[in-house]
Length: 511
Image (cartoon, rainbow, N blue to C red; front, top):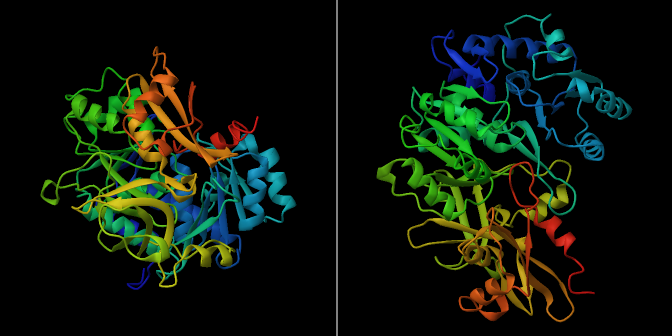
């Protein structure tokens, strides 16, 4: 491996411990993979990919269940110098058609049970190679890879070369493929390794899916580049996580996982005694969850903020000397990241004022795959990426995300930020969570509507909640209607899908 090779795999491989026979990954089905196993298996899969005579920059699409082998496929794709395309394993036919048409992968890997329709779809669209990979180490990918040598020299790549395309969840319009380079991903992995104080003896509980930034990049890269063991769960199981806490030091989750862990009687201070760090992201963490976690475990969750297009941007401090973690904020700007809050006309607004979050830095992606107009739209004239998030800095430099600019409600000419109203609703007795949306209204243009979920066994009174809000916020912000529902629609990462709620309630005021 030449010194100037900036292939992300080379950097991750350099993080492996000197003793390659140590355990790298232990699964929930009782399997143990050594660092040597990771090195050899990725070499064999990379050699298989090399044998296919793929064009330069070929995309390898994975529509698979979570398994260590699926992670190895990702690493092997990097190693061979191709571009990895992770696809949510819940995607159905119409969605997959779009991704294959848009990304034009040369290789598609899917589960055996889906081969009959994924294979047909891929071959009809000119994909040259379709392999199967199951979560029990079976499938044609591994059968073919087993015939190849277990040594492989990583392809030489520069920092700007494409490593992965991540399709954003696409809450409005078509999904866009964010193009992330070897340099984007490596700079972020190294920043987090330092900022989150990764140590030689750290052990990560990996309970997240691996088709998304959080599980594939933040969690996996963190452990790999640090040579840290992963306790691997094929799916999130709160009891299985609690059982592993005494043997682990780091856990990363989305807020829903923390809510479910708090329902486990076994979650105690004693169970968490060996733990060093609990990280939350991908969706906002309720202040109640933050406080309940502190009380139950003695640990303060570290909340951070990032997105598919930028990887991680801000983080609450890890080390005590860097300050305290403040609930309801996503912390301070990470080293090497530029972040500014702008108002009308693009001028930077002072601390305390709400505006648009714009970012720059080594982690920011190169643009959207085959969407030059969309890319140009999302960057400012001076090269900053418009995140689409709305936020504010406090006096100490902590960032609070107030919502998405597309979730902004303009009612009777006034700007209403849903997160502010949700904050008040979520503090009310008996409320588990809420989502505030704008729906078409004949007089106001948009009307503010609150969709609220009660705690188990609690009967919520919509009129009383409306009255309670009238005492606390300006009249134009008070919801015209409060709807009590059993649950909120979410995507795979636990984000509330407000676009679906808006669709469901479109005609609320037009009757």
